[in-house]
View: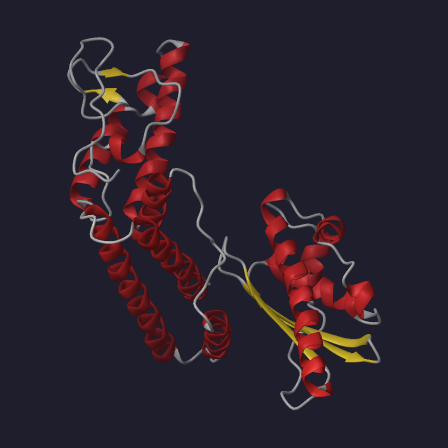
Length: 129
Length: 213
């Protein structure tokens, strides 16, 4: 199976790889795993005034999983929380031309986005109370 | 139901003799025409059990793989020719699945749950975080190209964890066989162990891939 050009591009030059420092504030972290293959994906967002100002990821998995999370961080930057929640795995499938056997990679990225946002919301609730 | 015996004893349509495998009759040397893939254990006339006799599995596989080989059917009727291709593919799929402990457990679990699925996403608390840390340390070890000894130590740790997992799975299946525990609880516990196993296996795959390049 050949990867699409966009997957290869993200795989060779992944955007926004890394983590935010533990002491940084306004961070939401999502850590998710793919039961099908054992891939793990960590995606983090940095939020200011309900806007995602930065995003980082680290994925241990196949090219499609790396490309899906790399693309997700690109899309997240500059979006509001509400806008970010509208990102669907099918958008990622379409953008990267993922074949059916790799759709679960895009699902993983959507799960990671949601889980990072939820983590941010839980944490900010914790600090304001 | 788990049983020590193969569940059915297929009879050859040609010579009416009871066959060891539904795929081929060794008595009249004829390939059997089948519409659907037989049960993996029955293909090798083996009992439905996790503690499989691997030597028997291999021996029976080798006998069958020769008899069913498509080369022998190149000049046969279209039906037998197609059947030899199909049966060979079924045989290889069954052999691969039964040979490895985790895939064997997965197949047996599927048989025992009759398609009822337990949660494949469920993991022990904190396990995903642990895998992420393991993946990160492995990455550091692999980048540090000269440190083959540390990579080997890391690999052996994971191998050991997988072996412990397999021991647990074996105990869980044997509880089911002996009916000494709640079935659903044991089956769910096996599923949980299999979920964990996939992430550990992924770490080993990464090491072997790095050693090939």
